[in-house]
Amino acid sequence: MSRSALVAAVLALTGGAALAQSLEPSNLPLQPPPADSTVGEVIIEAPKIIERSRLGVVTQEATMSVRVPYGDLDLKTPQGSAELDRRVRVAANYVCDQLERRYPEGSPERFWCTKNAIAGTRPQVIKARNRL
Image (cartoon, rainbow, N blue to C red; front, side):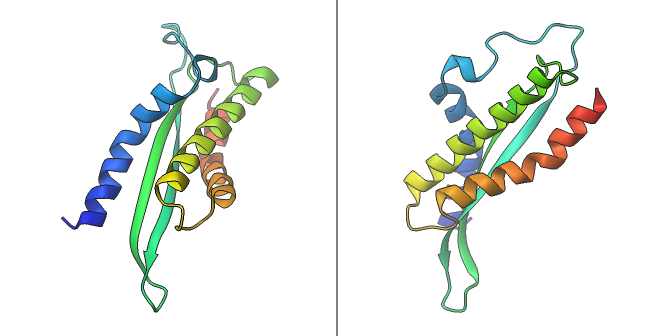
């Protein structure tokens, strides 16, 4: 396995643990959802291109992902839906901040990374809202 692939794999595997330790407790549920609730999660994934060849081909990329739980929310209410959106934003910001710190010269820059990560979750969020 190449060094860049190993680094990307380590980042992908440690991203969720780092999120759980770094965010304030108010950002994520502190207790497991009740037994009668629907358990679910949205997965935030953000890639960062670290290196390109002279021809523009991506030669090194790191990806970080985290899981955002929503099983404790009532997505039928505006408050529950807004809370899921907030959790997605917090997680996307966190992931992109971490990638930006580790790879400041990579692309996309933090703003676009966050925007793309949030946009990438839209199908999952819509599915979660329609399921309930």
